[in-house]
Length: 117
Length: 111
Image (cartoon, helix red, strand yellow):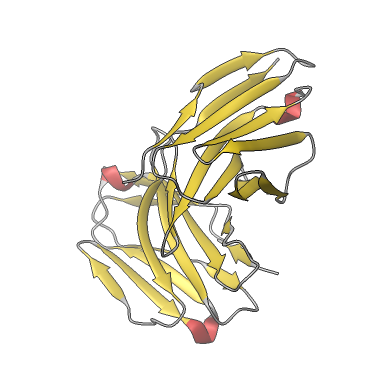
């Protein structure tokens, strides 16, 4: 069965600190997708990144970076030089791509990040 | 981005009343999903659809039913609302390449 674990329930940092949000997943499939979403206080879900299981290359987008390691089943998210606007709940999610799975997106419970000025 | 709208955005209803939430898409995607979001639980899948009249249960389907009579509409019904169904409900569609788009959410309060 597929499962996503975000062990950090809440994290609080001071502006300009770097912060890493952890995500560990479980799946029996060899083909799957991993996602990160941001949910700001306004409530909408904002897509940040999608990574497929065959691409372990790390990705950087501005202050955001993602580290995908299949060996440890982890897909961690780092925010460099955090800002107050980064305050949100962040969700990691997994979708299996095998036939018959219907591609259901399974979420972790989320990590609430508070960035204080 | 795919167009996806949820209605209503907010609703307060009484225990025992039926409630229907609507998810509407404008781009003809096959897969549609209903999730609920509760503190400490993240988003959990209620039901999903893989085509007109093709639906299946998710992780937390008890007390909910769905219907999809047209590609563009996916309805979630609470036959007899209970306080435990107070939640924020999100609809999602899946485009090709496993790109998911979420609606803005419906905040449902059952009193």
